[in-house]
Length: 99
Image (cartoon, rainbow, N blue to C red; front, side, top):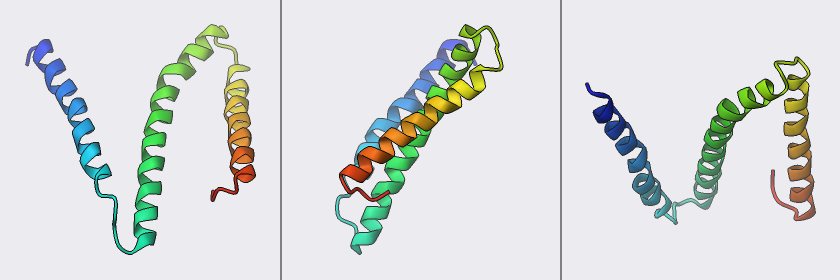
């Protein structure tokens, strides 16, 4: 298979996720209510996990290479994630959001 055809097929699959996601999002009312709430939480967590994984795959190697392959890069990256978690958790507690 030619390289151009592979690119077109893969981008077509990636682009088809947009209308599929829109269709899933159009189901606003699922009964009972707790299933609706859990489904929404699942979709948000799933999307957030995919974005976090994509950012990690791209940015962590860049960060490590910019620190000249130092072992200090690992705790710095983990500390950044932990600080972000603490800030997000404290903002959620101020607004009394569920975890």
